[in-house]
Length: 236
Image: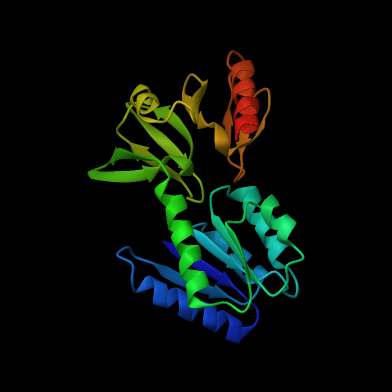
């Protein structure tokens, strides 16, 4: 698990990191914490490599404030856990808009941080995973992190959220269609499966995911994909 702390006031940043490090020592899994003094410095890093799982954000910061940064992140990533740690409660309603896990009011405490991280872990435990063969390795991949699957040769290539490039696997498109959750994935083209929850926009010839990735949509399947997309977000 990788955690980012964005806080412009160093004593507040250091205290939050201290509490996170205390929590980390009681965990069996690998946990790393990276700090940023501004929204701009985090965004520069995030644009290069979108590999964070949990984001702790102050709201009142000079330049890009925490709420602006949260909105930008949500445009690219629907699954990252966002936690606001702030001295003001004025943005509580907007916190719901960006699907924040928690809204922590300062002063922070180790108990508040521990409870928040347990909620973050619980959200991750609810994820579905699929086991895939890539080269000589066997990988466990979160279904939520898959934007699309493309048939290529005897296997497939998988486009994932926040991960540059594609993952080549031995499984065929039909095998992956049977492995992946049918409530979340569907065919949008004879060579592609797409994850409905990651779609931002569907056009007549292609669709765009939250992170800006695009894949084709066949004319034959356009209406069916569009209906599933509308029904999915009405249900969720």
